[in-house]
Image 1 (cartoon, helix red, strand yellow):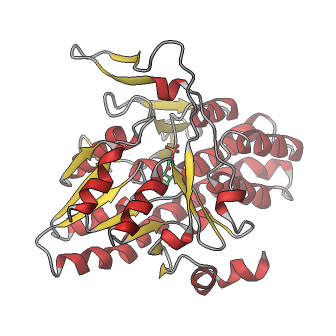
Image 2: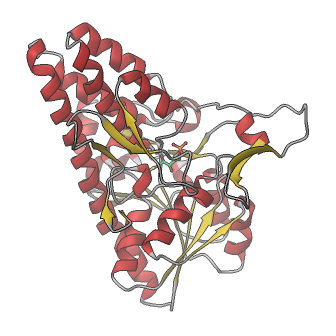
Length: 365
Ligand code: MRU
């Protein structure tokens, strides 16, 4: 992503000191582009919990750097285990967090203490490079879906939920990668962007990203998608995911399931884009087995935005005294998913489809 002519990833090591970790503060976007400096694992954990960094692949990548930061002051195996456990407890639904931390632990556990810090930074950097390349390939494998629509229509109308773009990954995004590639290839695309209450990742982050890239888009209330589908205004839905089970159920931001139901009722293809780090072959039935994060009710009762005079403020929109519930994710059963877009190609949302693309994951687990 280019900001003021400079290309950025969503996480990087500060080139000046060579060790601190930089991220964009996503709680300030799109009103202010502010870069945060993280200097220890506690700050990393707090950034993940508060959603200054968010998006399944990105929290894994930033947590990996959190391990490196933890080891700088104490490179023992005990400290490694402590940091992995602490960072792993920050958010429960996205499996990428556990995937990245397990990869760090496997790379570092058996090393002599004096080698751990350098190796931790190298492994975190490799996780970032892996994610960027994986997302690029997801874009390439998703692109033909848009090309097919473009071969018979003047414009490709997509609908996406939440933010599965560049700012949710290290680069490119998952659901948005094919859209960026289609736009760059000259295919006329237009994206219906679900606002994605309660935290508005669609209205704030997806719209911001798409706008910066020059992709035509329209923000809609979360409840508008079904109506647009009924009136033939959506050709294709593509969403990201926080965890895909071995049978192809997909957890994603709350409200995704309702979009999949509406898509099925209206014959609109519903695709889920995922990197290998989002596949959890240890669970089958997503509705029963995937832990759903319950966040503060204040995210539902309150709204944050920019006032006309430029201040970023949070106001209450719900009646005073009312309780609020805030399950942050839901699970779309595989039967409602047209297919999965991965870095290895597209497949059916089923055990057979996933096993054909990831045979090693189904053999060993
Ligand atoms: O709570 P968030 O903002 O971290 O939720 C993010 C999503 O639901 C994304 O769609 C998902 O992580 C995929 S990001 C490539």
